[in-house]
Image 1 (tube, rainbow, N blue to C red):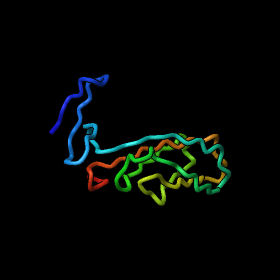
Image 2 (spheres, one colour):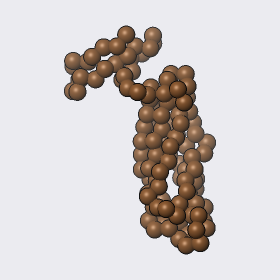
Image 3 (spheres, one colour):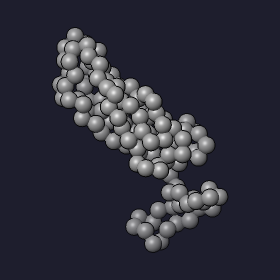
Image 4 (tube, rainbow, N blue to C red):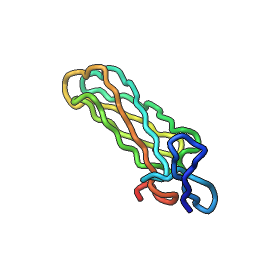
Length: 116
């Protein structure tokens, strides 16, 4: 069953999964964040930078997608669980990066699978 909530701003749709009500969207649950990792030295690896998801958001480990604002950096999400993940960042050139930020999104597409 899907209902339109008239008591909430924006008239969101909610769906009943047989147990509890959830906001109806293209994904079952999602979260996003930004982490300032500062400058990373030449050929250096930093981490883990612990990232936390909102409490109770995910029922299984979501798919995490990372983006960086520095062309010299690569980022990896490791040890992903329902509560967060470890972020590792490395420079891929012989020069140091500038002050870097990593943006992440996490999605769980259905109640029983992250990938959907």
